Amino acid sequence: MYFLHTERASPELVEPEHPSPAQPDSDPNTLDPANWVSLGNVARQYGDAYSHPNRGNATLETERLERLLFPWLAGAAPQLASTAAAAASASGRGIVITTGSKYALIARHSITTLRERGSVLPIEIVYCGDSDLGEPQRAMLAALPGVTAVDMKKLLPGLECAADWSSKPFAVLVSSFREVILMDADALFFQKPEVLFDMQGYRETGALFFRDRSLPYGLWGFGVGTSELLGQIAAPYLDRLLINSTQVAKWQVSHVFDSGVVVWDKQRAMPAILLTCLLNSEPFKETLYKKTLGDKESFWMAHEALRVPFKMAPGNGGAIGTGHQVGDVFRVCGVLFHPDEHGRPLWFNGGLFPRGSTEVQPVVAPEFVAIEYESRRAVWEYLGSQFCLRTRLGTAAEAVASGDAISYKLEGSDKAAAQRMVQLWTEISGDASVGGL
Image (tube, rainbow, N blue to C red; front, top):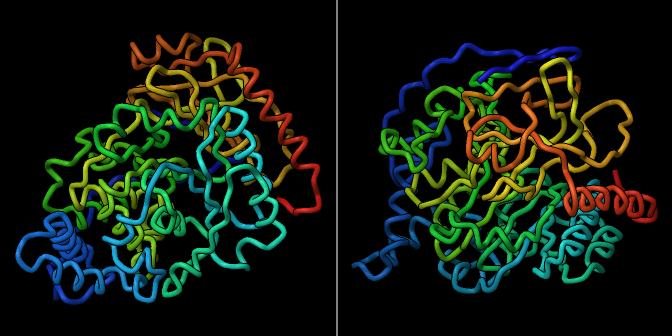
């Protein structure tokens, strides 16, 4: 695995180091935000009581630990008054998207694209009060077919929700669906998202996640903090993690999860969902966001800490965008791409243009995708404001079979879908009456 950088990029590669030693355990009746070993132990007590409701005083123990771990359930709407109620009241399948006013148009674009793909799943837009998603934007989104706006503050009044990444696991918790596809507002699909429920990993476990790019451990300082926190909260299981090939635990990659799409079954994964929520709430959120990149790794840490089964979708994070041939090297530059189980385009995270750039970027339909299955062979570059994956031209089938970084040009229905995404954005972004970027 390699990482090259040129032009305006100046990433710092921190020398890899082993995680800090685990802290000693503390009072199990209190939560010390600096002691993630104790947090893991208390969370496992809860998970054990939750999983064995008919054992002795398990119900009383569950209620006690819920008050300790999840205080924001106090005063919640009846369907969220307890974790058992939250699991029992949820039904059906649906999509959950968190967004505020700033990205409302992007969410509208994503939803419109889903409907054109043929998706009929109901969608809940979850927001954090009026200051997060204004009335005009709520009305715009709620007018779309099968879309409902849900105010998290009204359902969880005891939660100091924030208009940022941390609201994502809570959005799953408050949603009315049992089986949930949690999507970022700028996630765009080539296929109906319903196919996620049919993927083998989800069918087996009820929890399906996607990998991030295979960037080297220590890049921009990331990876070190993830290893440290994982080593504490999941201390008993470090020699037998649920994903044994976890490269961040082996000091090889800086990020593991891409939380742009998460698939959860509340009936099978509720303890892990709740622990993910806890890690994204204060005072633990401060430590998590200081040592890792936002919410991403919290999903993984929660599952590993509680041994709640999950599966990773095939492959590592790839690239989708433009193709560039320079000598013998072919690069695909753009946003984060994910294939399906057969290497075909499934979805990508980041929308149609890089919003982090200070320059005006043209909206261009992506033409190439690049996928890779073995991070040790991946060569990533950072050119200006985009990540690029070095590849060789080939086919999706070659990438699946060889593990090499392979790129191929979008053709047929995939090419048409990409072009239609651009056309829809042009139409939707012209509606200035609802605000936007």
